[in-house]
Length: 171
Image 1 (tube, one colour):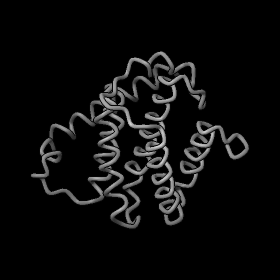
Image 2: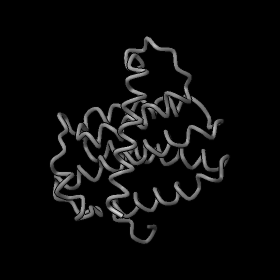
Image 3: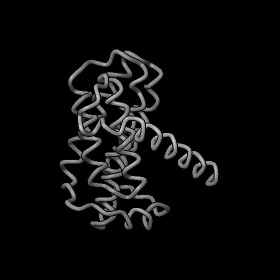
Image 4: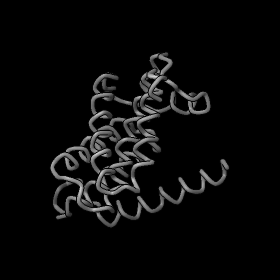
């Protein structure tokens, strides 16, 4: 199982590097990209930055993706990876915040040592992350009302969020 996960992450990193190389000017706004692609790009970039241990860039990328998500209603099914990646990024950032502050919050011991090695130049307060996470969950809920295939991921993320926030009765 672990080898499978590592191989998948490795493949994910390769593909994101290809996208980043091909579309490297996106971050400088000199490349015209449709809104759906921006949602996916910045959402996936947030996960890639977390994997690289750069939490500042991860937070910024997730925030950019979220800005694009809030500009529009869900109309395209293929923006699902971007919607989901934003939530996953905020969950991981919240986990890091809890792990480094010694807060319980459902931090898995398997990740604890890895998470503590990540760096964040100017960490955001957990309340700010929770607010963004809640907004991202709301966006995915609206998305899943239109595209029902996303419901299971919404419920999974909602349960993870509730667990981390010690809302065990809801999780």
